[in-house]
Image (cartoon, rainbow, N blue to C red):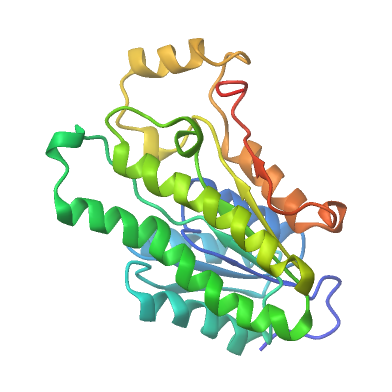
Length: 251
């Protein structure tokens, strides 16, 4: 159970928190003194390694396995977090998968998998977390979308579709839950230097850099800084917004 008397007795749940952007978000929330719950699916070793590292300065960190394509496991992730720490203050819906494929070659199973992980998991985790937040009339939910959810990307129609759905989900839910003191915002990163983009060759990456006015790829820290801001009291009059740290790639 959580330790009493901590400087920051707030709890954050981060889906897909074992690697990439999610890992950096977990690191930064840990350094800010939050109780941290890291959800992972296939990255067990990375999750355990991260937990070991973070417990050097924050003992109130746990990781839980959850396949977010399964409604039951997504909800249990949130319920375990509440059981462990008593409440949830911030939910970061970060988990997602991507795939590059011609639209005419996308199979129904690939389409469904993209939906259930990228949108279904976001829906189930949010619905379960909101039940707790409504009791306290307080809470912040931060959904991670993508610039491709804003502009669309060729050969990523299914990915772009459900990242766009997260944006619509954010705006509608912000209007519904605002009167209850719950803020819903969305971060739509540009091209970020993570292993999700590791399959791109050097020429492709250089082309993306050249299309970015700030002339570099984004870092996980660039995204995490925005997430931490939206979780902080400095953002208490912000809801329903789509913030895109993308170096000017999409304006």
